[in-house]
Image 1 (tube, rainbow, N blue to C red):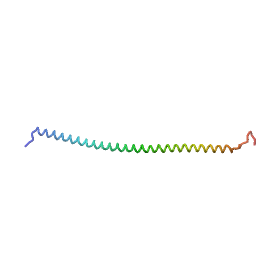
Image 2 (cartoon, rainbow, N blue to C red; image 1 turned 60 degrees about the horizontal axis):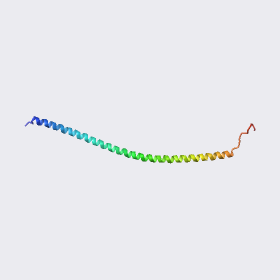
Image 3 (cartoon, rainbow, N blue to C red; image 1 turned 180 degrees about the vertical axis):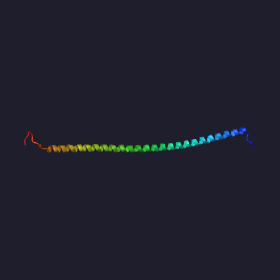
Image 4 (cartoon, rainbow, N blue to C red; image 1 turned 30 degrees about the vertical axis):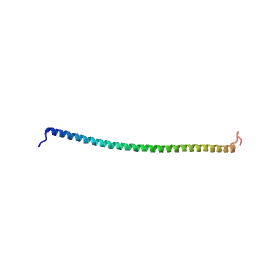
Length: 102
């Protein structure tokens, strides 16, 4: 028994429609997988951002402590230098005679 021409045309259209549906389902599946990858990458980046923010906060705290230590060291060095100058200034005697005296 042969298939009537109208039925053959309808079967071809149905087959084409099913092929298009399969292709669309594959594209959707790939898009969903890609979106899942993007969501995972975004979560990783957010975790990295949080970790870097914590590290930056710690580094800024260390920098502040180092600046304070530097200022204290500078203050002590200035004080020691002033003390040394004062001691040397009190003990200095003229080494060269004035006005050509020998």
